[in-house]
Length: 364
Length: 186
Image 1 (tube, rainbow over the protein chains, first blue to last red):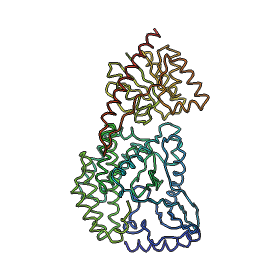
Image 2 (tube, one colour; image 1 turned 90 degrees about the horizontal axis):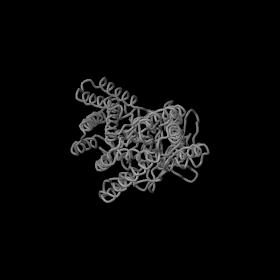
Image 3 (tube, rainbow over the protein chains, first blue to last red; image 1 turned 45 degrees about the horizontal axis):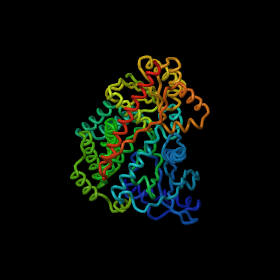
Image 4 (cartoon, helix red, strand yellow; image 1 turned 90 degrees about the vertical axis):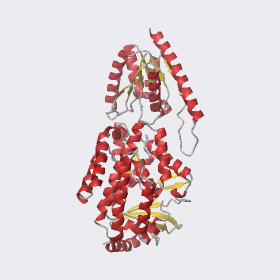
């Protein structure tokens, strides 16, 4: 199954290459976005359109570029949404802060493909290579910038509904219930996970008003280091299709869940900030969003199980167990033990292919 | 004293005037006053002892202005003074309500952004003028912003002390202004 997928990618690249060349661009040999596990996994949080993200160079000036290309209907929608969101972001009249986005060099539709080519934002070092204090201040700066865009009035909602989209407490609860039910159907034998997910559902329902209270804020639902670039002190947001108006803490939740695995001190620093500077309701809202996002990631991996085999299937099962354990901890207002995280990481690394290990280098 | 705080913004909004309104209503209540907040925020953050009336901002503008004015009129009849934060969506209702009830009115022009918008718009300028003419006192007082407690940094104890002092001073000065405005109206 994995071989077939690889062949599909190679065939697609063969078709795409002359089109890209015709437009005055060339593709790089190493493509991190379509190697390793990326061949099988699509972005966790977006509408999962089948788009390819490629790295290339503009022939004129040899400038490095990012090429997003697709024939898939959902993928086209994502690329188009991203363009609309990127432009709209510059013009949100109720945003108090300024966002940075990579410049679009070319947008075209050719031979059934929708293509968007953007400048590649180079950064001196990856986010996680920077000192922890710097990571903290950069992350906080972005969260505050996002929080500065709050759609509250009838007019605000009208402006954003056709671009970014707007989700409320009902949507979060309904989506989580879908994750829970889907996981239950796919893995009926995992009673413990079902109980944990059930507890999560109860928490969301019980605190529905708190979820709603902090809705209407701009949030990047896939705000993780590989989706932004740091240049000087400015953060460039990539993947604008993941921007929507929703709970203020949805972006925080995704970031913190990511840092549970990749950088515990940063997770702790951000939790310290929230505890000491935000209201009790906001702390609950963050917890609820972490529950929601964990339900989503567990469903993502559960859904992936049937499409995997061998080591990747074993790893996917371990991922489900790990994120289930994180969910259990969050529900108890605790953080998962360092020991459990390290144990999982060791296992994960032993199960990863060489190609995936290579792809992971300098990714975050 | 029974005080109505009329504000356009209130937390979870993050604007300065929202944060100010929450803090001052909390402090005025601690001083023994009966405080009611009226705001456009959909689900406001609660404070023990403070009554908050929220007008849903997602209603079209003329409707929400009408609802705000109607609720404020009722509150004005039950309270001693109206303390309003600047912004046309509050200035218009307070001016109408004071015109009808002759309640003492104090306006704080804390929201610089709203003030900037007013300066650039003739209609908003007219509304502000109307409200200012009805006010017993217009103030431009802004106590210190709360210092943040950050990881990897020392706890800002001195800044926190100064912040608390500035709010204490501001609350005391407000109480004097309210008393004078109330006596003047009598």
